Image (tube, rainbow, N blue to C red; front, top):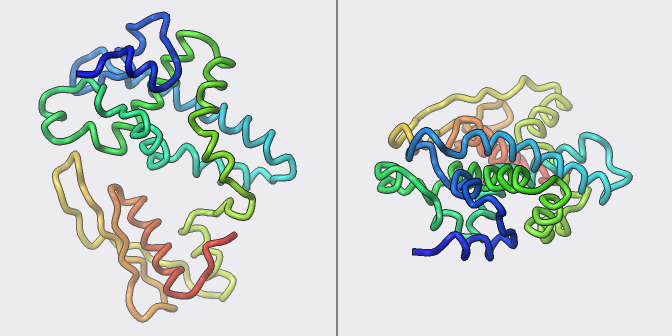
Length: 227
């Protein structure tokens, strides 16, 4: 069993108030005192920190470009990746049912926990100290960003592509939902007159499945991923 001290060493931050860290790592399945409120706070702080960093790094970027770059960094998938780099799942405090179902591996739970940790760090110190630490977590990802890849999401790009060709907007249809309620997979078809057959996308939510279907539709029509 790994200790809280080991986790703090991983993230590069030592809490003055150890109870804040414990709460940040406690999933709602364990009890009433959990990380949901800290997650709410951490989400806002993370968005501010990333927005400020992007504002400084890209002085010529337009608002829309900055928003898309931020979205790439604060999306669930990216946050879950960062959480896995710190092995957050090994330290989560969860109810037995959620633990048995593999909740400690789930993107949604890992990303929420990372935001809760950020919220706890803020309450334990101040925004400047949190910004310094979070900046190191995202340093490599920030360095890899470019205005050339400040992509609009796939659904937006597909809509613009079709509108430019005087085509009707695409239709998204859920054709199947599989899995238990806590771990569902959605299958969505993207239908447009420019495709002989619908593009089928899948994902852990309807929104993600629709985005994936749109991306597949764009690829089948030979549309570049770049803005």
